[in-house]
Image (cartoon, helix red, strand yellow):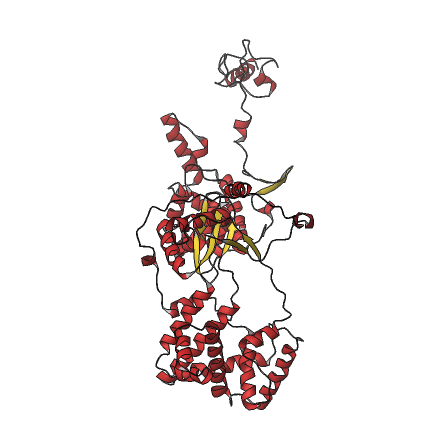
Amino acid sequence: MGWIEVTSPAPPLPDPQTTAAFPRVKLKALDKAKILRGTEVKIIPFTNRKQIGTNAIMFLPLAELSSSLAHDQPLLTPGDTLWAAGWVIKANDPEFPHSNWNGWMKRIHANDAKQSTQIEFLPVIEGDPNDLNTIFTTLKECIRRAGVAIVTFDLPIWLKAVNIIKQANLPVIPRLGGFHLLKSYLGSMGNIMEDSGLLDVIQLIYPGSTTAKHIMDGGCFDKAIRVHLLIDAAIYQHIMKLAFTEEERGDMKTFMEKVADGKMGARHSDPVVPVFEQRFEETFKRLAKGGRTPALWVEYHHMVDVIKLDHHMVDVLYFQVRAEDADVLVMLVHHSSDSHHPLFLTTSNGSYDVRKIKESLSETQKSYLLFCHAFTGCDTVSAIAGHGKTTLFARFCEGDAAEYIDIFLDTEATKETVIQAGTAIFKYIYHGRDTALGEIRYNMFSRKAAAGVIKPETLPPTEGAAAQHSLRAYLQTRDWILLQSMSLNPSDYGWTIGVHGYEPVPTLDPTAPEELLQFTSCNCHGDCSNRRCSCKKNGVTCISACGVCNGITCRNCSHDVVESEEDIDNDC
């Protein structure tokens, strides 16, 4: 099987020295065989031969398919409106020069910048192109080269490829070749319009029943496209001849002449263009409600628009993002739209269909996704030990902490409300909503101490640490929502500037109470009465933790001090 790789737009050209022509070298048959053997693609057997792939294809109503398109972008260009307007002008002014759709488009786009495309011929796969093993091998090689691949086949092989892709769940978008796709569409149009009188109209352009019937069946490819575009032009002339004033037609004629002369690109507009677009749309909508016959011909007009769209279509069928970071996947799922092109995240472990992931989530899960990923640990926020993301995500989506999570999704929330909400969420995580966070921490420590196993990282954070964690999580969530980096001053949201840049602030609370920080003990064998005693030196009394005196038998304990005072009093 022969195959090529098409890249559009083409990558930058390498150094001209590396693209210089190579001298032709005559090789012997044995040398050619060695070269070909080095590029040989080994056939991978396809073992699953059940013909179930095409059964999994879903056929959707046209209305449902069209609803998935981005309605904020017109399907046809202003150039199409100008082409239709030209026929309206010609209906009133037969001397006005105007061409069919293909000629008009070539004329107004003659000076457009053309996008370059790179075509690379790949090693021939030694196998029957119709064999399932060969097709399977080709698909696997495409995946190896491109991750998520768009592969175009002719109709017979396309059907088999769809079966294989569905059965093996391969990350491949199978595309029917443009010729077969449009030919099938033209045949469908002929079938729909079979008893409408379209055949008789076609014979006015191409006399004879044989050619006309071939056109109706999708044959005579070039003639079929020309016929349908000419009939669409006649429809515009017939129904729109008197729809515009002489002044409107004059303004459009002047603008069209500028465009045709290259003085104005076809993508630029003029105030008269929206007038024609709106009038066209209103007229066809009104006719569609005027009975079965007008509605059928309006539908035919829209089918011809699809032919134009096929010629306009930019060959961008999907977008692929390459990254190894879960943060990227979470943002793609949150910000992607169903009206956009298919979107895939490709990692070293495989590819992920962002649209399918988003469709599998409930509305609540979609809303809480960014917050949950930030709060439970990401590149800028520490994880919560002992609590997995999946478990916490499920708990958050139950709705019991919704009022607090919504504060993190509010880009105008204050620091005080964020800290309060974050503390409440930590209490919810550790099942103590009506208990202070410090008390929850103490109770859990006591239980673990009694059991003899204490892992400090599994304890709830202190209120100070929870506050800083919450501020960092809020800042990261806000950045993701707004698609901005450091949308607020990080120094106010759990970060400080250190030697190596921004560093997280663990807490603003002291490490321990002041009395505990001043804790000192000694191991003196004397009476602890001089500065050789560490307790005496630091100005504190001996305590029970002192090794010898235990804060009882020395002269630096509180008991001795009291006795000394009593003795003094007695002496006095």
